[in-house]
Image (tube, rainbow, N blue to C red; front, top):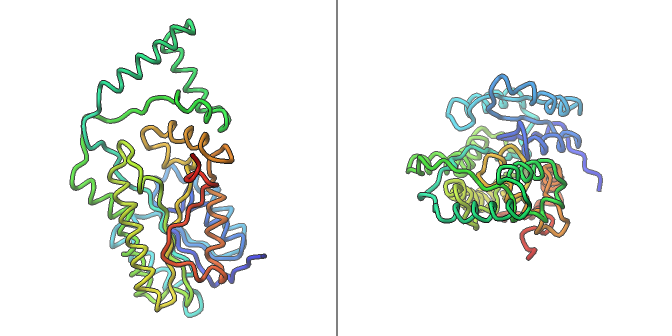
Length: 320
């Protein structure tokens, strides 16, 4: 099936300067869809971001980016106002994608010192058996996990560098509230804003990104996990309540993907190694593969997919 979208169809991507959002923008642009990206990055970071935007511009579609706070009323109103003028009477938002990564990664409880001490003793024992210092062992493992092939690091999953946590602070109510709104319920806020401005196409898609943290407890991930559960609930509600207006809502659960957002999570080296070991294909998911699937979800043929969470992970989730 050859996919070709009309340039009057737009994708509005929240969090599109890297990762899944940028990969999706590139993919849809190559198939003719116009792209609007909302992101928030420091001016100094733009030299690394603009080449990705240039790839979209090279596809000969309309493109606009907004470097502002997508979670503020002012930022949202700026984007909606600009798109209302830019799209005019003919352009419409075919796809709204929520890929905002803004959450708090603090611990809920004090770290168990005994667990850390046991890990340290095990490393020292291994270093002694190898005839090197514990520091040399740590450096060797660190370089292996940073530079090694995914299949190699998968085989060494249990030796991944130990996670480091900020043990001086704990998750508080405000941390939960901000994270749940940023990565969860703001999906509803943006859907309503686009709907109220009458910018949605007659057959539109609302897509968002979740992760395995929606059902697996990871240290330091409690607030983000709560946000992902809220996101999925909101998406189901959108799927039901906006269906009479031609809007479909689905959530994509990607496999573990090496990204800037993942590397911020304590223990990300363990996550990547374990995922590479578990995945039937022996490697991690790529953002481009997820974008390929999102492109399919935007087709007319995918119109009957609504209100579900779809895993795009090569079988990672179901592999023992």
